[in-house]
Image 1: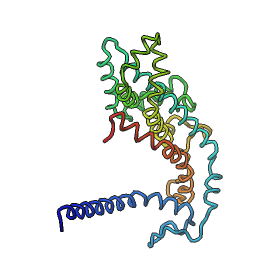
Image 2 (image 1 turned 90 degrees about the vertical axis):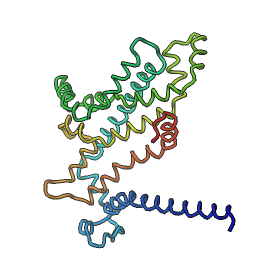
Image 3 (image 1 turned 180 degrees about the horizontal axis):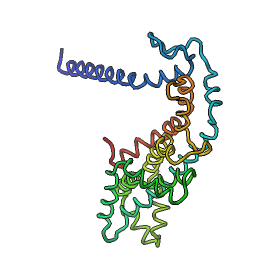
Image 4 (image 1 turned 45 degrees about the horizontal axis):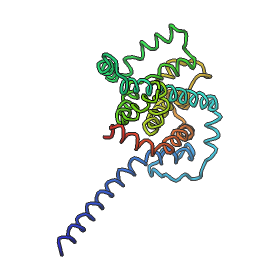
Length: 281
């Protein structure tokens, strides 16, 4: 056997072992979703069995209809979509404007101010929850859309991610625009933003998914059924001593669909945006 053949054999064995390990991890990560989907189509008596059979016998499609009827799913759906979309749009706008200022504008103390803003990422979310709740209460915003949307519209993470991307854009474009008489606002709106679609799509996707599944904050600031969101609505299927697993899993599948569609649609932007922003790894 020649050295070339030995190298090919070694590469074949390495690739086979690598793909085998990846398949095992992939199946392990996929199993919870398979169990959730299988449980959503089972009868209650078949959920916990010794055989752990993933094939429902029979298929109970009415679980989805029952899950939709048990709680006001339509209202929860509208609230979740409204809150997630408003926060996504607002957070993308505020983060891009702040990132443009920190990346492209020159003013005294810019870098120190950015470091201070970045340091807020080290403060745990739960530490700021109580002060923000007290502020919302003093403003009389409890149980309103303003309480659900406005506190989430500003983020240091989004500013940091977009700043990293903006800094990679060639300054010659900006200089040429200034010579042509463009203002800072016009450079931001007509040059920087169109060139930053991958990073903006990445931030928008992360923001939408995070707010779509946010449970704690809507639970704290809402009290009426008309203002609750889907993650809070899922808790309606759990009592103190019992849980209706078939309806809960059917409702979870319904909740999962929009987030899954957003992720699939923006997947190519996420990969490109993370790579170009220097945040990979």
